[in-house]
Length: 379
Image 1 (cartoon, one colour):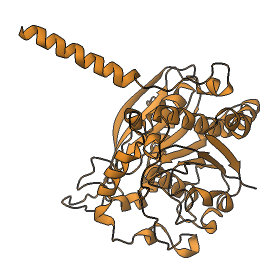
Image 2: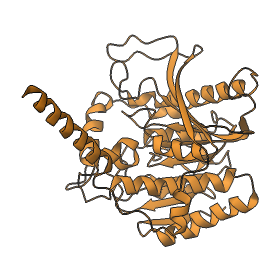
Image 3: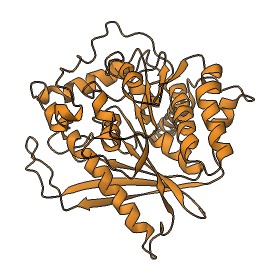
Image 4: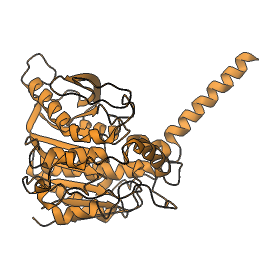
């Protein structure tokens, strides 16, 4: 009898796992569409490994009951194409507040299958398991974490004993990130004083930019894309994404109707039974922000003459009720299409491929996908 109960429970758990993995999935994209083609896995099998990198030149600040450290420990995951011949573009993904290095795994896997190397770190104090609890203001230190990680890849590229020896295309290094990671990527790419000049293209997915005025972007002219949703419950569209076209020359703005903030993260796919995944996302993030609610730290990002504005942040999670949102799995497909075609339009080896990617992003993508619109700022 006991064995039957165990077998029944095992069968139930297997059925539940299968349902979580395959249940409530959206309809696939039309098989003959351009979008279906751009969403296809590339020709490479993908592998990854985790490594702890330590920057012993910069400290980690005290945080709650955490005493701090003289170093910054960066748990890092690296996805790469197996059997790669020659050098590959390098992309650094930055996770959002209270997330982790796996938050962009669906993007990393897609890019690696197409011949890119992708890396993501758990930032020391903004990840979900941060000692003392996640601390949002440590974002000011994260662009330097990106530079440190790029340094590692550059050094590996010249190390004949390393697996990435002569595998890094230093002329094609890009950054992308979600939410606070989007802000991190924007800081690393554009900051008038601290930008990493090795970065040649950047993507922010629902990242806050309300503190960045036009002067912030003027010192660098590199390709930039923002992906955002008008119903995002955490990052207000009007005071963030809507400022991109007036402020950033040549920037691309992808507006995705009915997309939730939480749905952009890889883990959001497990919330696809919710009417709007931001219901859970808002609950978590607002609790995480409580200890810095009254702290003014925006000035630590930069000075007014650098285009950093002293403006209050728009309140998070004030939509009531939350509108219905699209299935996060579809949302991640659409995000992959935009980000992949954007970087291919800049980093692909052939001019023909770059032209095809640019044409798809600006015209084919919004024509085939009813939820999105794509606008481009004047140069």
